[in-house]
Length: 212
Image (cartoon, rainbow, N blue to C red; front, side, top):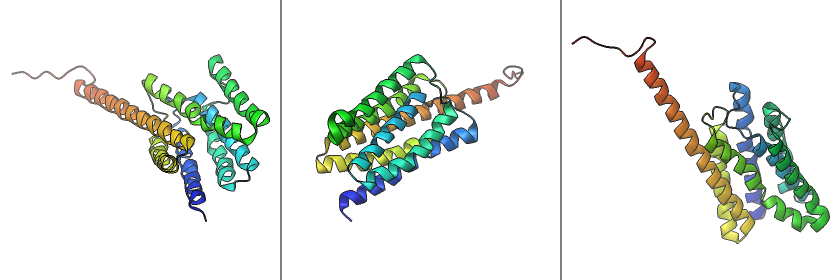
């Protein structure tokens, strides 16, 4: 098996693996805070684009993982709610869906590959924005973004080593996004823990006062 295909299959497994913790976390905890609906929906469109591209160029290493990855992505969206939360999200999703849908008819597999190559931005950016703007991130599965660092390291290294700019771009964007989200998870959970400690110190009827 060529090295490129071997790395591709490994990357596909990691890609699917990083998508699975999120729906399991929401299902287990019932929490959705901090999980971006738009990022999830855009991810489904991007993965569908990779599925179509893989079929068009007859590359099972691309379309098989994409087909499998749609399962946890669709489940996550179903848990978040299938309807867009606001008009802005609906509009941005429609624009991205139109861009991916028209890429192949207008420019064949080459244009489709270029468009979906930027899909990592459409998928990760909303999650980063949610992590930076939400006070509570109880719905975010840390394991998803920890695995994303491995995903980013693999494809980033491969892209730089082979001189493939879109692959390297994917690794850099995903890596920076995952690191940012994990940092926010750490800071928000630390702040929540400190708040609980302070409340426990105060007690149910106010701070304890000891007679000297």
